Picture 1 (cartoon, rainbow, N blue to C red):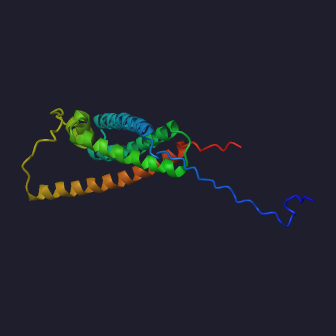
Picture 2 (cartoon, rainbow, N blue to C red; picture 1 turned 180 degrees about the vertical axis):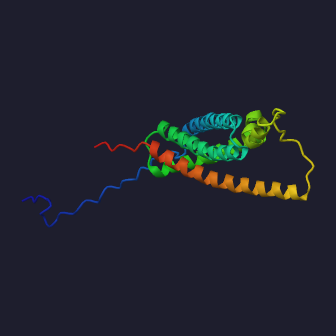
Length: 208
């Protein structure tokens, strides 16, 4: 008489579980194509906003506003325009990417921020910014000359004027202030880039 070796049979043995090898899906988390697109948008937005701020500042100076007020206003607007530009660039980067989580978006936003600062520093150091960069950085001095009968002459950044000890200390103090302003603005720009990246990121969809 034959016995069926089913689950209820004393002779039944559980089969060995099948061996399943885990499948690992690998892909790069850094999306350089969207990052480059965001960098272009960020630099273009910064140039347009800087031109707008400088034009408004010089127009106000020609209308009688003090040079100190114009210089402060242009400096504040330079930081604001940087924040707006980095936000727009990071938002564009995240919007042109495929679905990704916030951590990946912030990683790509950080790379965009660092690359944008490096490219902007290179453009400024190589003189690509041209006369516009000189005008923007010396708006207060130009307004002073606009309000005088002698006309205006754009200062030459390559010239090395003869200065005494007191003027050298003043230049050093101004350089230190500019350095702290750059550090503060760069960190705020990083925050703006992270916010733009997280806002523009599209969440992965779960297909059931």
